[in-house]
Image (cartoon, rainbow, N blue to C red):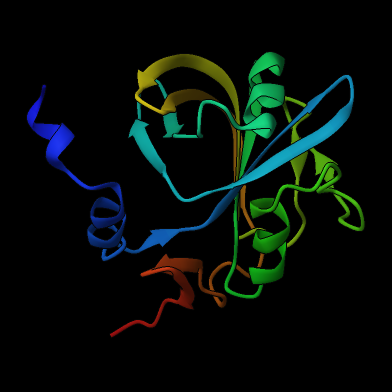
Length: 166
């Protein structure tokens, strides 16, 4: 038995909840249409080559659909997009009902109003326990025209908040 077996899952979640994370929606499009999921585990990995990563649950239906496409788009949500996050955090069969979207380099859905959009091809998928560690090679990226006046949507201790400069 490893030492990590002594760590209670609820305690792990509570303690790590003290680290604020930005909120993203990772999207893809397969033969059945667009798929997406809310993700807080997103980070940059490398400048050369340009790589990013996120960690979806490895049994997530949305992730299994996106995984098959070989590409994904990270939509960084703004502080005014809490409702959008709620839709993509849920279990709906059609998370895109009522949500307009466009595409970029890979054909994965781009959600209008996102602070930033990072469109990627899947570069590697690593084992991360009950999650996958997905590394993406960035094919295109951009920020919203108003990204300098809106803050990001943040998740902290089980709730949503916003960034305030000090």
